[in-house]
Amino acid sequence: MQYMVRVEIHNASRETYDRLHSAMEAESFSRTLTADGTGKKSHMPIGAYWTETSSDAWTVMEAAKRAALPIHAGAEIVVCGGPRLVFYNCPEYVEPRPFASLANLLAPQPNLDFSSGHAFTLPTIGPQTLALRGLADFYRSR
Image (cartoon, rainbow, N blue to C red; front, side, top):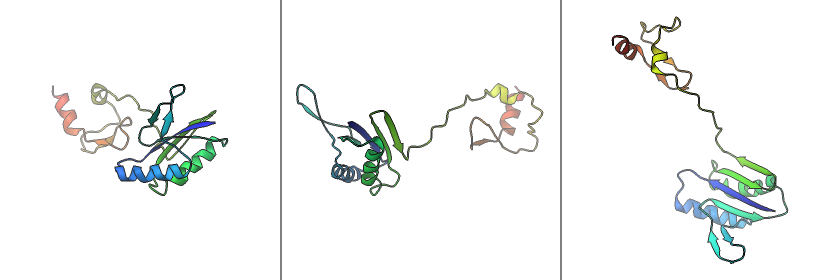
């Protein structure tokens, strides 16, 4: 079975990827593709590899981890092939929530007290906070 593997190392230098290419090659991954029919050879993009093996996707992932993690512990790895897509170290995706309009924020609400000057966290922004006392006063005076 054929597998495609993508290894992403953020802010990596060319030298880091050269070391990764050597380590992946030692684990039987290739960056060269051969076109069916024409036999023309092409390089895959940086950080992309393929292999052909009778192993499953988890075994391919372990081989990719053996190659990539000694070079950079934060390497993100995706293996696709066969019936599975497996990944390692990829950041969690958080569904964005729609931003509340400024008009909704400035509408009178019993739980918001701007007189103390404290900042509050908007639920759609997460850890960022806005100090709205001056902003709210400005828009209310219009």
